[in-house]
Every structure is written in structure tokens, then in C-alpha cells.
Length: 134
Image 1 (tube, rainbow, N blue to C red):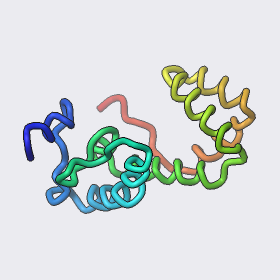
Image 2 (tube, rainbow, N blue to C red):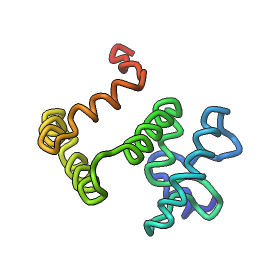
Image 3 (cartoon, rainbow, N blue to C red):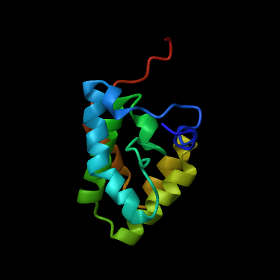
């Protein structure tokens, strides 16, 4: 890996796709097949020239089970939303801006009429609560 590629990971080294666990490799392949082409089409890079994930995609390999479920959530939201594309993007950007506090997320989703849909989607995934004692 070149020094320029190494710098793309920031404090986290870029994962070598040939040296990851089976679960990480499945996630890597999913990202490469879905999110990377979307990123390319949107005008930004998701991989290095050597094929390593960069940006928000590289750290997702640290928690592949959670990242995989999150990608499923994103796909379900996009496929089943009752919002038109403009409304959907406004909600995404607004929630992203307000995500520093749960109250902001509640207010935005409630105001846009998607609160129950968002809660239903989140409750559909069996993701364990973090262990704060560890």
C-alpha cells in the first residue's frame, strides 16, 4: 500500500481485503457491489486504486454484523419509503444534522410523519444494546 493510500485511512489503517475474516469479506463484497458503485456515480471514491475501502466504508469492517444490518436498513428505507425522493433527501440531511441528540431525531421524524415508520424499521432488526461495562 502506498503512503498516499495509507493516509486515506486517517487513524485507522485500511483493511487489506485479502486479510480479513469471512464476515468482514462478505461485508466488503457487499459494499463493493452496492455502495462503491453508488459512490462512484455520486462523484466520490469509496475505494483506493488497489481496491481497499476508504471513507466511512473502511471502519465498517470493524463491526461487520452491525454494518451489514445497517446496510439492510438503508436498502429497506430506500425501497419502501412513502416519501418522494426530494422529501426523503430533506429528511436524511435534516436527521444527519440533528443526529447529535435523540430529541432532534424524534422531532424531525415526528414532524415529517415518518416517526412510526422509522421506529418500526429500527425495531425490526435484532441488534443488541452496547455493553457499556466492557
